[in-house]
Image: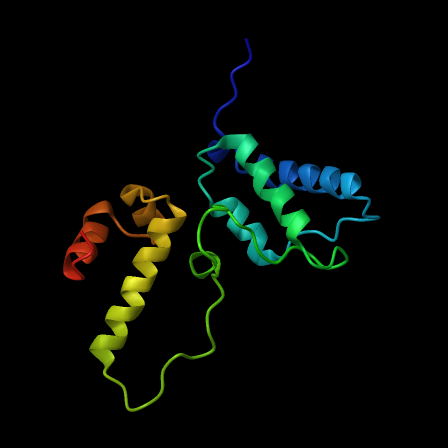
Length: 151
């Protein structure tokens, strides 16, 4: 029997497997080449915890190839949860969603709440993983959830 550690423990394998699955999908779709992943996507691939292991990686990459509007451009966005709403999936920051004068405390609360929700979504509502995504301890994360009455 061959035992392999989970994908999250084999970070060096993720880019190789992702590229393999992408090239295979491009071949199935009849694309002449695979343009690669953007740096943002590459970082997303490495930071995602991969609870579904290699099968989930394959699905995410194949979905990205299939949904890429221009196969000659690199993949710019990955969808880890295909059942999430478009608002939850969108991770690009807006140029600026504020103007002066500004109620700073209210603005900060909105930013924190949005960040906490995004981390929870990406971690599939696992609070310990969401805290790790934000570089917080579990207790700090829970404190913020309580502060903004999100528990």
